[in-house]
Length: 146
Image (cartoon, rainbow, N blue to C red; front, top):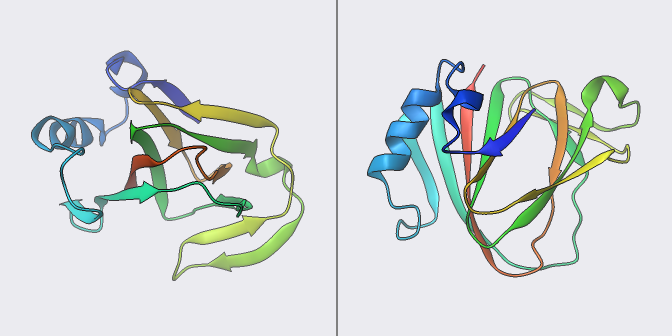
């Protein structure tokens, strides 16, 4: 996992796909685009822009094998729970290749606050669970094929 300010390119520059994501962010106003999926490089890199509202559902830890997640808060903030996948033992739902998700019942060990300007990158070895926001939030989730 990497968490840092998105403009601190020293944290992200070594990632081979970061320049592509950075270029997309420079030419796209995430505040004004419609919610939905936007292809950056087809299925290799795409972004989901979503508006989320407070609710009582607390999703379990998830992990992906085919995609890396880069998550940003555009407006508002949200928390993401995290635990190393290697420490997880409670499989809640077996891995689904179609949905690229494995769900775990384990408790998280870390809570991250994602606010505008902060980027969190979750790799296949990172179990994570974006939590419902306390207030309305607009977020962007980049999916980068491994």
